[in-house]
Length: 147
Image (cartoon, rainbow, N blue to C red):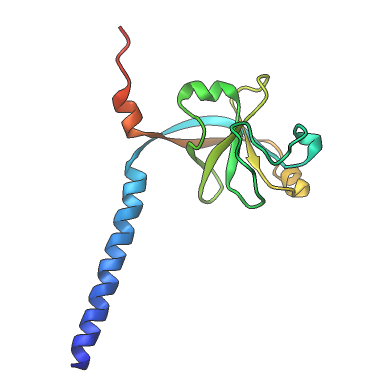
């Protein structure tokens, strides 16, 4: 009887693992990942760097300390990078979401959100790097060919 409990337990662990892996691959599989070189700087939720509402982003999202999000220059919007586009940034862990837009004067640039940590943002400085951004496959399927 004891041996059956172990077999059942390990079977459950294996099933759980398979489900977790399949969920992760589903997330990855729903995007076509494209790459572009950009200039990356950092910004904070402080009045001197933003307008009168430093925690509210361009699409109305509330920015909270610790969020993995970025602002993008408006020229990148034409590439399909839009609100909540997932972005992988060279040299940083995890996936960042596009939550903000930059002033129209910037081109080929992203701004990484660093909460209220101005020192951390200054230490980041200005870097040229590559980003990978995810375009949902269903959006690519729905595009009509240009005639």
